[in-house]
Image (cartoon, rainbow, N blue to C red):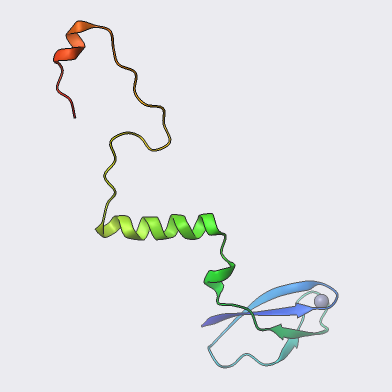
Length: 92
Ligand SMILES: [Zn+2]
């Protein structure tokens, strides 16, 4: 199955899920019933927001190549304690 994009002149674009190779040049609009023409667009992945695509890519990479960090990403660096007893604690 694949997702195909059609555009109704009145209602705008909508998606139709059909088996690959069965999408015709037009279909009826689900809202108004008038013919809607097929839009030949880039693959679905290219229409995904960049931040979402990066998050998915990072998640897939982390399955085999987990990132090693020294601190919480985006967080402030930890403040050093002034308590001398804390200086004897192991560092990680
Ligand atoms: Zn319509």
